[in-house]
Length: 398
Ligand code: OSB
Ligand code: MG
Image 1 (cartoon, rainbow, N blue to C red):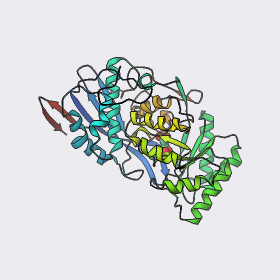
Image 2: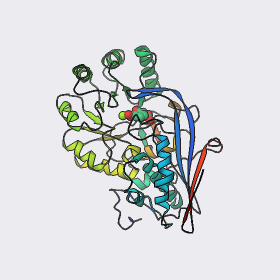
Image 3: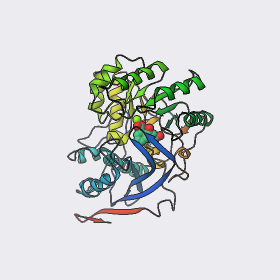
Image 4: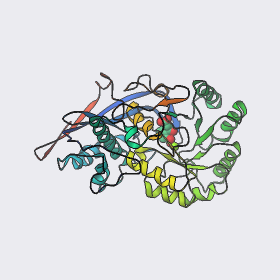
């Protein structure tokens, strides 16, 4: 249980022996969302699910790519991720034919710029198969400190406006969600949040996510954000564009409500810079956006050293991606309920055994690896691309 030479694992992380990878498959399938999800960047009715499946002589491991179908959240999107995985990332990972550890994935792929969600999917699959082989759960390997995690719900901008939103908030409370996050955009913000406060009172854990939809140079936008600052929100997430660290810092100094950064935080150095310049009082950690679970733990470390609480976000993942997120959210330093709702918030039928809400919590899987795998038959309609390494030759089939 030591780090491979040339790699350093983050604090508290222990990885078992490397595994011999025979084949890596990319699986694509489209799954309808239970209801449309609208944010400042668009309206989504389904998910283009892209999974990585790694096969070794003794086991299989799974990872999910967090990309949306269009490059609207960040520059990444599913078609591009599938191509970069097939033609660049997977061949590089398989090139030596030597046994592989998840700790080596990021260093081996470092010459490829960006593509963090694609890289994270690959690292997650290596971790899963490596841990399954050793009989260790992901939560245990990452150093989880709790067996269940408190969860919140992320509510999109509803087609039915404020009345529909109030009903959704009510249903979320009834279901046991521990806090409610509401998507806002210019034109759908102060009135909606004021209505929620008026109806449910100051005791409701409430936060907003602007998905970079506001312009710090627009007086009307700033007036709306100042209005949100009056409502006793737990945090306001990513009001401005990802590169606008200084604007976030400037406005954070004027608001009482802590600013949480999501889109801006792409790696541990970026996290350090954002925290040190005052742009982020809270950090949302998503393994896809950060390029892997191990880098996500490093972001947690950077924040912890600076007294900044973190929490685990989501990207509408199926049970595969969610399982990994739930393990991460069980680490020390994760101080707010995650955007890790139960499976039935997104899917009529998840790809895996569903995650269920019990008393406002999800149980952290404690079986080997990520603790979930696609159920038989659920991927029968998937398109499969296979990359394999045999005797020094890499073959790709699709
Ligand atoms: O900004 O946190 C976000 C979903 C897709 C893309 C970005 C975000 C979200 C969510 C939902 O807010 C998180 C989830 O419940 O998976
Ligand atoms: Mg967000």
